[in-house]
Image (cartoon, rainbow, N blue to C red):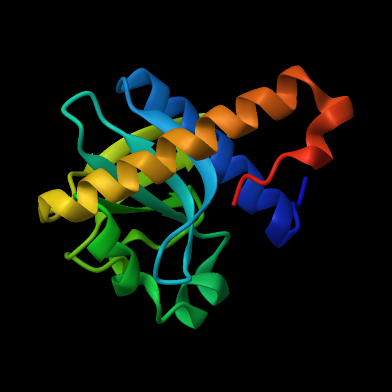
Amino acid sequence: MLLSAPQRSARVRQAASRLCRALAWAPLHEVALPNGRRADILALAPDGGFVCIEVKSGVPDFMADTKWPEYREFSDAFYFAVDEDFPLGLIPAEAGLIATAGLDAELLREAPAHRMAPARRRALLHRFAMLAACRLEQAADPVDAFALSCE
């Protein structure tokens, strides 16, 4: 079965999120960053570090993306997540690599570490916690969901 780009992206995102949970990372999807970018997945690691994962639906999506270096300033580790049909040699060495097949995912290459400044980490941790709590409340009380502003 051929999947559309949005369907492929959704499947890669779901598999990458499952890997996050297996690694004890707490993933949040579609997180607005202070620089105006939106992380596909921003995960909080057990050591308090942030992992940013950029999901790519295919080569055209990857080739059109020139903004990915801007995510690095708001993470301690940056990864691309791609599916089994993606040519892995395209992923730059400055990024980690997660490969997915269906709903399974494997961390193929660790991301080079680049620790955030403590003040930026504190601000991002606050943003992450507020967004996670807000989304949890929206799920718990969908009737009143429009009363909350999560972003």
